[in-house]
Image 1 (cartoon, rainbow, N blue to C red):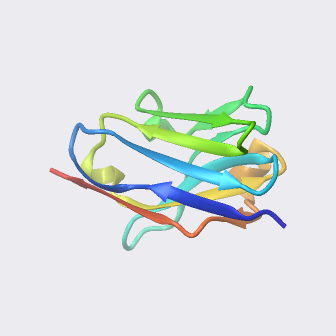
Image 2: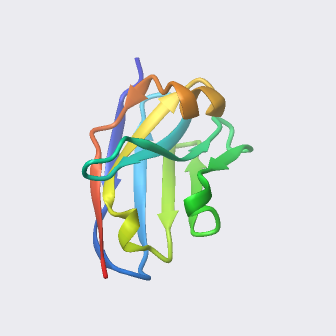
Length: 118
């Protein structure tokens, strides 16, 4: 069982930046999904347990950066050039690999709201 504790999020103007953090109880591939009102939850980014592999959805490529501190089992999602369409609840997720995380994440964080105003 992996416990995930998220922090970060909040309200920011379009073009601004935010950083999300997610602390895991053990080493594992980690990432984020997001869910906007009335929409399905979608994959955002993932990073392997060792940090050598990262994956992004096309809409955030070049704007978001996922990284991790393995000593702390903590992943970070740096979100730059935020757009109103990035507004959603962001959920940290974990799985054995980035491929599994993208398709069938096994563990979830509590979620944190990100709101981007125009």
